Length: 405
Image (cartoon, rainbow, N blue to C red; front, top):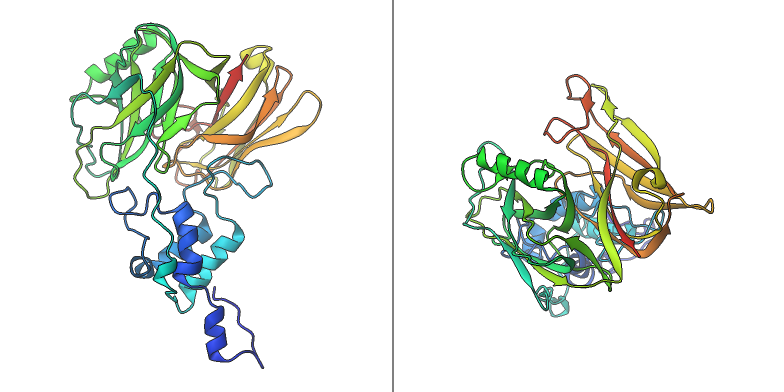
């Protein structure tokens, strides 16, 4: 789509040219705020967008990606119709139109003196108390696949029960580390199960598509763009003394050198005012028939029947499905009868696993009803698809980052 210029008795060609967006004045500020953290030298994106020359080479692809909302990789709709989130890189319609107009027009450079600065170096975590580090350099096993999902069992050396209040993920090879999620086994039996899976495979760790494939709760989640995550002041995720953790890393083949030594740095505290517990709201009764381009599974859950009649504050949500997933929406009916949209994902992408921090946390109780609606495309499936951890299985899940006082 080109910028609409006045027709008939419109302006001269010179005036029309001046009305077109330029890279450094109009496009680069959008890219700097939303894209440059990944699309710069040494990061995971396959090309850089930090200069006019580099961006012009891929202008058409950039325009197509933002129109389809494949990029920036922010799945939750953030246009005011559902919710508001911290650190959002959702482009509004005007920003998308500016990029489209520039890519489809004369691709004017503008004045390089007006170029925005590169993003500041990632913040680092103050007061690190414990660290999860891979034992050895790991070389992802891609083979015929572009992705490798690997779980590593690591003992952070926690000697007394404590609370995780903040963390920093430091990817050892930012060009291949696509996302990192840390899980805490929920029982000794779950830990033994993880060790059995590790022992059954050669090398360090075990294959773990979708999750750790054992009973566990999420403690930390990361994707490119933000390395340090701080939980709300006075809160923390409980971590038990002596319990090893499971670091799941999704590697994506970008053709670079493959060795990785990722680490996760923890800030643990001894006391908190509120217990932050990430728990999973699930619809495990899904049954997706084959050959359906737009199949929807919906379930409404009264939270009191699920986790007990507790009051809590919802601070963030994390949607999760597998590769048939297309859409996900969650709404809550509060005890006073009011309804609030928790998250609306119009285009699910399994490759981007995020937690979305609510700008305005929501007070909930046992009488809150949450409706979880998951859409799927089973066009290529054979037979009915059910809930499960495997590549050919599916899920309908929302991680609820909840503070209990």
